[in-house]
Length: 482
Image: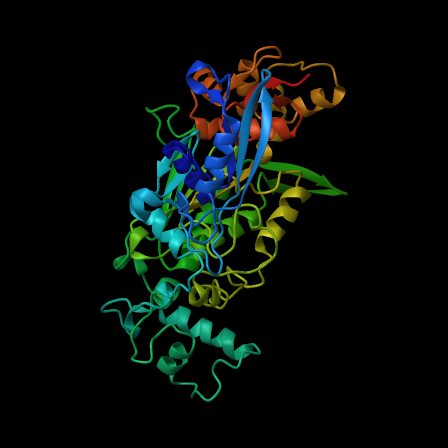
């Protein structure tokens, strides 16, 4: 099995899986290779991906795969489908090319290239299913005096007023013992990271970059107009509950508000439901990685004319993926922090978090009730969770400018009336008779590949654009739908 194939197997296994087609010459425009020695290739692949005792596979651990024969231009090809590798008992991530070693031989897929994992990405994959106790670490030098007395008092009041047994046997005036019981303090009276972030008077005194950065951009990507960097920007700091509240408010003040007539009255509705914004930002803050690798990274909230994007460092933890994030199951990388954020009230009212695992499901329901697409996690990577929330602005009347007619179906004309200008920009460069690759669309629109990819996927799902090959194929191109 050739080195390049081994690297692609590793890359696909460590990301979302993919398809490798053997027997095509990329330098010749993916023309088929005549007289392909199929039996020799099949044997080489089966040996290189063997799990049998005594064999020496080219990658370890070997991912699940399927091998099939196909035909292109009347010539034989081999289609190797690699399934994503998931950590489970007896299987240690990441998948790596054995001859290169785990540090230099572990890859991930980025567009149509195989890229070496960074040390941090490798760390995330190795520890994906390990209990993470980072939020229990001690904050050096911090004491009870560094916590907000008001927040501490309100939190303990919530516990006493509820049905929790957490404070049983602890005297009402023994604050230190009560905080130790809920892991805000250690048994020795030192402040834990979770306690400091949730209840600290000002956590950024020790961790200045653990904030939420809200940036409002004038165009459809971050580099559209270098002379105008931001319309609005707020670096939200303070304890995590306050930080989340401020970030939600910063986004809301930059969204359009629509007047909706309801019965005899009316009400103002923001482009995105407030509860969805709160859940997305809370999840980012609550489930991000707080290890030393990324304490210099913020949670980023980017507001564009057509969507809001929330990105947090750390990738998905446990068996959570971009595909099952809305399954209703709760998994917490930061168990102590999640518990505390469900207890700390905001100004004496509700807390910012709950532990039922239904938050993303509620986001989906709230978005659909407002006629919006479900939250999109498809841009998430090994080291970042990214959720995209399409704005109600895509349904605004001004979005009706642009190419007016697609091939005849009334349904397509109706769909055109509710797509955003960003998608129209892509439709303008596509044709009905000449397929174009994602890189060609990127060049013709002046947008990055990462920018156009989710828009193309959405247009395909709407039936406005046709794709010529499966999503993971290098030969995938796009046409205006017939």
